[in-house]
Structures are given as structure tokens and as C-alpha cells.
Length: 200
Length: 200
DNA sequence: ACTTGATTAGTACCTGGTTCTAAGAAGAGG
DNA sequence: CCTCTTCTTAGAACCAGGTACTAATCAAGT
Image (cartoon, each protein chain N blue to C red):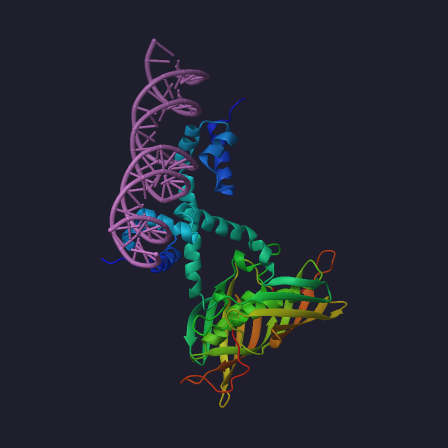
């Protein structure tokens, strides 16, 4: 049984741990046919932490992710906002926003950006989307930065509706447009007879 | 120093572990002022695994999530699907889908469910939303289960468009409706001159 | 022959537990 | 008062999965 040269073993070891971080040194000795000390020396050289540390790290990462989720009440970063007038937000299409096969952004993310912005631009305690009429003008791909611009077109009196138009661009190109009707509460508390409002 | 009754201590212990799963029994003895054996008996009674098991579980969950992400190309669980005809999906509104203050679902999640379903119901390799005309009929709250029903209304020849209507209900009540126009590729590969398609 | 790098063996020790046995303390019921 | 039960604490043995360190062996290289 000819053993592998050290470098190759290191390569294998890294790969094995990468695609199964739950593996113990004991398991690795069986698979690589070297002593457990060798495995440990290898991990040291490669700077790979022990099993428990690996799991702890993974757990911490996922924990932090969960805790930072509540922050994203707005999809995309708002970079300009004039309440009841206009707003701009930017949203980068990342891996998690695209269809894995085609790398084309899933529409609800573009909608979410536009919708969030349309709601944010309304200066009120509670603002909910009532209707939306949207059009996906061209597909947006992985890595592209989508810039949404919202304009408040009218704020009608009695029933507290606002019309908001949103145009999203990648560079100069229009990729999405939407007309939103947003219901807003009274500044005081919130309306009687607001039956057709909705979330966003 | 009067110690807490057992039930209260159990309450506290559960809460403490819940909002810091990285805590050791040793730490807990200091905070609850009981012996480490008591802590361990308590964990046993409550069925709370040891620190390492907790971390391992978290790590496994996040690992599985990452690996299963490509699966959730559809938002909501599809419970019935007749390709090119109709489909039904169910989607439970959870904490992460609502505005934290009002507990009302954010519209883009309802849209995402409907849109996903509209795309899924089209029997084609590539199907992308072109336009959508949607209406949020009433707000949906935390904990409600949203059932979306999609009907394919027409499939037009040359340009490969399909019209899909989606109605979402909570119980008997209509909460959302949308008319989608979906572009589809040719079954073979995918068309030349498809310039207005989009993601969903 | 001497040195160096790679590998293996073995021991002591660590953390964060489990499992089991045993012994006090505290209150309830007789 | 005694006894029974529940709760709590103590302690020892053991375990997984390591770290840290020492030492021995082997195979080349020069």
C-alpha cells in the first residue's frame, strides 16, 4: 500500500473536510490510511480547526444570520428619500436571488425592492400596498445592480390613497416598472373603513 | 438567598438557553445559583440536549438549508399541479414574513407565492414573468395559511405567452388576486427574439 | 556518517459533558 | 414523632474528541 505524498494528502484532506465538516479525525485516518497524529499535524499545517470548533463556527454563522434578518424591512438600500415625493434604492442581485440554472433574477425580488420603496416613500405610520400593476421589461442577471426610483404621483384626500410609480434600472436600461396604489393610515392612528389595504 | 421554585427555574433555564444556545452548564450554575447536577437534571427533564449537541444541530440545520436552497425555487408548498392547467400551493405566514410592528404580511411574499405558482404551472423549461397585474384584497396576518390557486387561461401560439390567473385565499376569504403573463421558451431550446421576458 | 523531513506512538491533560450511586434537606402525611 | 417523597447536591467513573508535548522510527539526501 503506497501512501500518497504529503501534498496530495493535504489536498484530499481539505476537500474531505469541506464537503463533510462533520467528519472526525478518527474517520479521516480510516479514509486516508495514516495515523491520527498525521491527520492532526496536517490540520495544524492547513489551519483547519477541530471538529467542535468547526461546528461552533457554523452554528454561530447561522445564528448571526437569523438575528440580522429583522433588519431587512426594506429590500435594497435606500440611498435617497424625500417623503411623499420620491425615493431611490439600490439592490444587488446575488446568488440567492436568481434561478440557479439560468442565473436570472426571480421576479419577486425585483417586485420586493420596488414595493418596499413605494411603501417607504409614503410618510405615514402604516402604509400598505393595495394594488400593483407591474411589468418586467427585461430580465436581470446575477451580479447586476438594480436601481429603483419611486415617484409619488398623487395623494388623494378622503380615502388616503397614494399613487406611486416605480422604475427600476440596470445602468441606463429600464428593467422593471410598476404602478402602486398605497393605502395609508391617518397620521393620528389609523382609519375606520380601510378594507382593501394590504401588505407589501 | 431564597432559591426559585423548580418550575420557575425551568422557565428561566429554557429562556436562557433559547436566547443563548452557546451557554454551558457551568455558566448556568452561576446564573441560577444551583449546582451543576441540578442544571443537568433540569435539562434532562426538559429534554434539552447538551451544548455540543445543540451546536451540532444548529450546524446541521444551516448546512441542510444551504444544500436545499436550490429546492425552494417555488415559494410555498405545491400540493396539486396539473401542468398547463392549474395548480395549488399553500404558504404559511410566519414571523419572518410580516412587518414586526403590525404583524401584517409583507406583500411581496404573497406576490412571490402567486408568481412562483404561476411559473410552476407552466410546463416548460424556462418560464419567466412578463407582466403582472395584482391586487391585495385584504391583509394577511401572522399565522394565517395562504392557499393560492392558479388557472392557466390561455396559451397563445407564436410568441409563447401564457395567461395565468392566481387567487389566494385564507380560508374562504380572497386575500390576493393576480393576472400574470408568462413567457415560455420553446420546448426545444429557447427562442430567438425573446426580449421582454423576465424573472419571477 | 550525519542530518533532515515525515510519520507514528504514547502520555498527560482539557472541556463539557453522561451515568450512576449516595447522601442530605424540606415538606407532607400519618 | 417517624416515614415517605421530592428536590438538590456531591462525587466518582467514564466518554468523545480533541491539544500539547516528547520520543522513536524510517527513508532519503548530501
